[in-house]
Image (cartoon, rainbow over all chains, first blue to last red; front, side):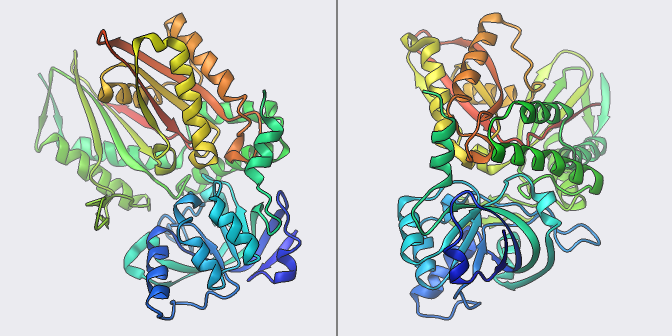
Length: 181
Length: 281
């Protein structure tokens, strides 16, 4: 399924666990340090450096761009480290997240509550994923280097729905299907 | 006494850091291709196909296989007849890491004061250096860029002697199960048994340098590796944790003697981006 980011709410309703998507449009990178700062800003009642409403976050810190490229290797990092910040960001309007690995019960609950979606893509396929990234702008926290927030323009970025608004989980389903007693 | 210049060591380390990050070992690639034939999950097959393609893109374009270009773990086997001239060995290695990560456009991941400020050192130093003195007049350098995701899911257990091989198997299976998709399966599982707490983990890490799937020369240890692999692949975790029959590509165990009261077991997990390159000077 081809989808555009920011993702419309009626599309999110169609994104059920296991659905393969290709994403085009705008996504924002944010890892541990950027999450920490975003939450600090929200806690102080300050404006975050970009409007979070409806946006997609990609848990990724790229390697430096080789000459002539817009970005270096650009695959997902482990999402679990962002779990403690996620419910608050979803409450502030974030609609989609892209990372790798499973999420906490609290995050899954927040995904249902705020009608959001968690997508996963292949860790360690950063050279391949970089090909779908067409434009990169650092928009905040430049001093964090690889952990700065970047606005990425992507074309046909591949991902899979891992947690949907219906409370399902790709990791639980996959493991149950292939586990031997 | 044979002389090796510090500048030569720097240059070698720089090259190894880059080659390791750009070129996935042929043994890892073969294991991924073999897994593609046997993997039962369609989603798992898609992941394995992406990984094989990713390795080709990284090699052809000389771009990092993974954005996590790792902690630079450097193993040295220093011949006792070798004399290093024109600088000290550790500084030569650090400089090699600095140059390699800069020239190769590799991500710098090391942060100082990791419990508080976490300020990036901006050149991926310090390296983690393991040196041993061996007979001869050669210097063998191995660079292993070790990604953080899999390293974070590694575990150590100080088992008791009566836990035996079953205890080791359960410990390894538990480690892999708890890691789930976070350690980027399919994994290579390094198991270190014996020695002391520190030595067991070093054995586990060194086991990751072995050609993927090559069994331990000791048949009893090889059987242990086989038993762990079978159990791990029954977990159903699969490539990237999406479900499937390939949770690990291989188990490599290294064993040494232990104290009469001890059975240390370390499990060092390696993601599918199992990178290491070596050179002999």
